[in-house]
Amino acid sequence: MINRLLRYRRLTACATLCLGALAACSNPTADGNKQDGNTAPALSASADYSALASNPAEVEAGKKVFSNCAVCHSAEAGAPSPAGPALAGVLGRKIGGAAEYPYSQALAKAEGDWTPEKLDTFLKNPMEAYPGTAMAFGGLAKGSDRKAVVAYLASTGSR
Image (cartoon, rainbow, N blue to C red; front, side):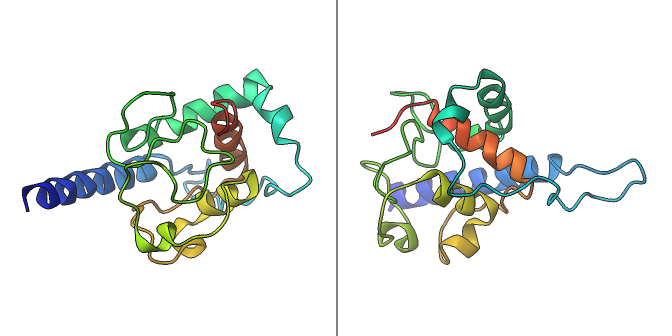
């Protein structure tokens, strides 16, 4: 009972922090209106992700965007993850397959492995990609941000 309450409080705190980080990421234009985030092309199956992972500028940009995700996730091998599953080596890992993490049914029952394309789709809108996911994150609207995060995660290795 205490573990369930503690896990609930951690998830609630993580959701609050993630939503706050997401709000901080809004990118108003000079006229005060928010950009729609669709100015960069979405990742496609033809994108060369290994090249992205070897591009230091892209990886660094992804690390910067990922700093908002670090409220809940770690991306360094062996580092503890605050609330969500650890993401080091996530590419190639079974969806919902991080050991010892209590995934929502949506991800626990998902088939396949995390590919760059699946990560891009998930990062764009987690709730739409896997309805019922417990990840309380509204998504990254900008294709360039998603591409950078995928490059950063690709640089952490694969399993």
